[in-house]
Each structure stands twice: as C-alpha cells, then as structure tokens.
Length: 360
Image (cartoon, rainbow, N blue to C red):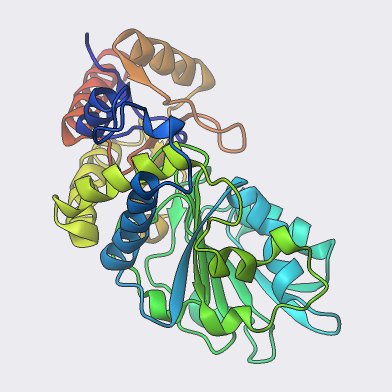
C-alpha cells in the first residue's frame, strides 16, 4: 500500500508509526484482551493512559504548576461560547483580536453572552497579515483578550506572542506543540487535537487555576471548567480512544526533540515550499504577507482560476491529498502539521517546480 501525501487542513495526517502501533493494540491493549475503546473509563488500565497523556502535555509544553490540563469535547467551537460564559460577567468587556474566520466566530459567540470590543483586525485586507502588537487597542480593564495563534484558512501566524496585563486567551488549535510556547503568559489555551496532536474528538484546555475561581455559580455544571478540573476530566465519559491516540502522538513528539524538535522540523518543511513560491517569478503567489506567514498552512494561488483547477487535478492524480484552498482565499493550501513528513513536502516541491516548468 502506498500512503498518500496528506496535506489536509484537519483532520490531518497522523504519524505512521503511531497508526501502526494503534493497529497492533486494536484487539488487545496491554494484555486486557480488549481494545482501549472497550475499556471502562474508570478502569486502572485506561486511567494510566489518561494521566500519562496529561503529564505529556505538561512536560512538552512546560506547563507551570499554576495551570491545569483538561481533556474536553466539542472542539474549539464549544470553547467559543464556553469562555465568555465562564469569564465575561455583566458590566465587563472582552477584547477580541480578529485575524481570520475562527477568531470572528469566537467573537460572534461572545457577543451573544456579553459585551465585547475589537482590539485589532486584519479583515480589511482579507486577513493577509497579523496586526502589529504595539498598535492593538488592549487595555488593563479588558476582562480578557482573545487571539487565534494560527489561521488555517488564510495562512497567517503570530510569530511573537503577546504578554499583556489582561488575562490572555488563545485558540491554538492549528499550531499547538508545533513550537515552544510561553504558557505562563496565558490564562487559557485551547486546541482541538485533530491537526497536530491526534484524531478529532479531543479538545485540550490549559487553564490557569486562579482563573477558575472567577466562575460564577450560575453556569451549568457541565459547562464549567472547574467541574472538569475537579474530576481530572473524568466528570463524564471522555473520548478515550482519542486520548489514547493523543498519548501515542505525544510520545512520538518527545522522541523527536519535543516542541523544539517540532519547530525545527516544521521550519524546514515550510521553507521548502515558501522558497518554491518566492522563486517562481510570480507564478505562485502566496496569500499571506511574508512577516506573517504560517508554518502550518501555506496558502497560494496560480495566475488564473483555470491553472488553479489544473494544478489541483494533476496534484490529486500524483497522490497529493487536501491541497484545495478554502473558498475565502481560493487557490491552494498545503497544511504542514507535525506529522506531515519532510519527504511529502519535498515531493510537493518537485511537483510544483515541474508544474511551473510545464505551464509557466
């Protein structure tokens, strides 16, 4: 069997050796005679997996003792309303920095719950850049400031993460553990696992313990962060197989140098494709401004819609999957999450060079 060159935006590529290990353990996990999917979430065998995954997140992201790690469900989309429900009381204002579709969706949900403001936005230029940190309207009286660290659709990424006085909250769904992050600067980080950390179904939340002391008693039990913190994310049945896979991926990351190793690997992969775009004489045109380019999602167009279509058709025939751009940007998008191999990126670079030669 030939594995596809998987550039899907999410759910995305998983490490091949992790998939093989999961396959070997599918019918008998650790001598239980059962798949991990069949184990009780209260069993000792599953609890070891659960706690190891939690410890792995803490280790690899250097999470300080001031913060807790939660495994939730509902993806980033459930976090959009859950955050203001827990932390946006009447009479206070939450600040949203808009750099793409997901930050706009987060703001839309927050507006249903409380008062908000927009501290900065790149919408007027179709989100081709990350606004300058020093020009943003951030005030110490803001209840919290929300950012999206990487923008999958537009291919932009925050290369300098802010250290502000108001509590800082970040959606890191598409670049979590792709690089080191100063977790202590954030009151809450959340991320769906399905791009860099595992299959869909698990949402990682890293939350400052003091932050949870602010949660009002009026919030429904299941939608309170402290409910899940108090029960070690076992208040109800967690996505056990997703957490099991997450744990394997964390071990895979650890064995490749951790967050620093992933950053080096991802820089190398992204450089291959950005260099191809930059040296194409305008045949390939990137969507994002150079100083805001994402290492996770490389967005680009060809000179015409007809060439975009031909490129994508030929790429699919050659074994490349997931290169279609989002309708907001059009064209093409190559998502280079942690598990995407250097070999796949080299193959795509060769394909792009050959396509340019034949159609330029």
